[in-house]
Image 1 (tube, rainbow, N blue to C red):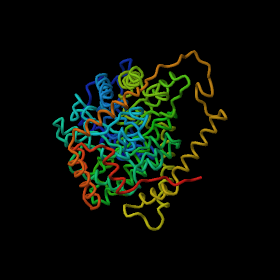
Image 2 (image 1 turned 135 degrees about the vertical axis):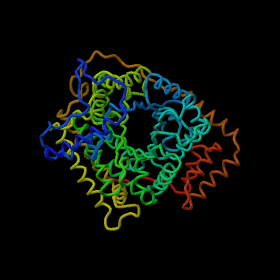
Image 3 (image 1 turned 90 degrees about the vertical axis):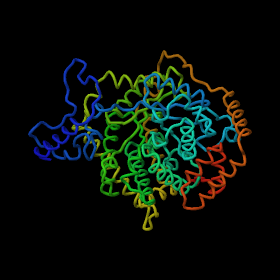
Image 4 (image 1 turned 45 degrees about the vertical axis):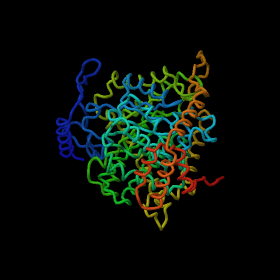
Length: 562
C-alpha cells in the first residue's frame, strides 16, 4: 500500500474516532506522557501489505471493530460462575456484580447440561457439583432474584438443551416484568463443537440444527439484542487442538451456522450480528494475540465475499475469551494466578470484547469466594493499572505478530478447504461447509486431528521439550495445601425436595397438554420456540421437555473408533 492510500486510511480513521464516544478516563502513561489512540506507518511512507493490517474500526478489522479501541468501551468483565443450587449461585452473582463485574455467565451442572432433572437416576451424585442445577423456570427466577435482567448482559454456557433452558430464562424475565426485546446477552447453543470436542449432546445433528434454526428466527424477530449462538472454540482447544485448529474449526462451525440462517431465508445482515464467538486464551502469548487478530480478518472476508453480507455489523466477529483451564496445574496452584494474568493480557491485546479469568483453584474444585475475587481483580488490574486500554491494537505492525497472524490465517484457510472437500459431490441442503462438518463429525476427522495434536504436545512434555513450572521443572515448593470449595450432598437432597414440591403444586394436565403441543409442532415446519415457552410457563421441567424430544427424535451415540 502506498503512502497516499495509507494517509487516506488514517484520515478515515481519524474522522470516525473524532465522531465516536470515548470514556472519561486518563489515557496517558504512568509517567504522564501523552500517547496516540492508534499508531501506524510514519507519515509519507508506504507499507507493503498494509491493507491486511489497516486501521481500527475498518475492514478487515484486524486491529479491532471500533476506531476507539478500548478508549470507547473497555471489555466486559464476565466471570463464569455457578455451583450448588440457584440461591447459592445468586449470592455469588451479586458478589461479582458488587465487586465490579460487568456481566453474568452461567455455569450449569452436568445433569442440566445433559437435559436431565435433578431427580433423574442418572443425576445421582452430580447435582450442583460443576455448576448450578436448573430444573424449572422457578429455578431461573431464584437464580436472578434481585438482578435486573434488562440491565445486565447474561451469557449461558450450554448447548445440548440450550433452547429449553433459554425459554426458562425468558419466562423468568417475564415474571420480573421485563420486556423481552430489551434482553441482551449470549446463549452458547453451538452443537457442532459438542460432536467435535465437548461431547454434551442430546440428539443427532439434524434435530439440533432444527432447534438452532428456530431459535435464530425467533431471536431475530423478537429479541434482536440477544445473541442466540456463541460459536465455541474454547472446548476444542481444551480438548488438545493447536491454535490454528481451534481457529479454523470454530470459524468453520460459524460458517455452518451462517448457512443455516441463509437456508431459513433469513437476511445475513440481520442474523449474522447475532452470532458471537468464544475462544480460549492459552499460554503462548504472541500466538494467541495473532489468533484473535486473524479471526476477525477471516470472518469479515468470508462474510463479505462468500456469504454476501454488506452491513458492517454483519462483518464483525465479536468474541468472548476465557483463560485456558487446561493450563492450570494442581501442583503449585498459586502459579495459576500468573498463568491466568498472562493469558488474559493476550486476550486484551488481541481485542477481546469480554473476558473470564479462571481462578487458581479451578483444577481442584469450583472456586472459593477468595479465589473468585482474585480472578476478578486480575482483570481489573489489567484494565485500570497497566495502560493497555490507551492504544488500539498496540502490537499492530510488529513484524513477529503480523507474520504470526498471516501464518495462522493461511493454515486456517487450508483447513477450510479440507472441510469443504469432506462434503463431497452432494453437499447438504444447508450448505457446503455444513456438509463437510457433518461428514467430518461422522468420520471422526475432527476428533482424530485433535487427538493427534494433543498426543504430540504430551510427548513434548514427557520428553521435557515443553516445560510446565511445578510439574516437569522447578518442582520444589513451600506451598501448603489449598482450602477448596466442597458441595454438600445436602444440596442435591434439597434440590430434589423442592422439585418434588413444585411438581405437586402445578397443573399436570396443563403440563402434559403443553408438552404434547410442542411435539406436534416439531412434526411440522413451525417454529418450536412459542410452544416450548408455553410448556415452560406451565412449569414443565427441563427433563420432561428433553425426554419428550428424545422420544420423538431419538438420542445420538458416537460411533466407536479405534
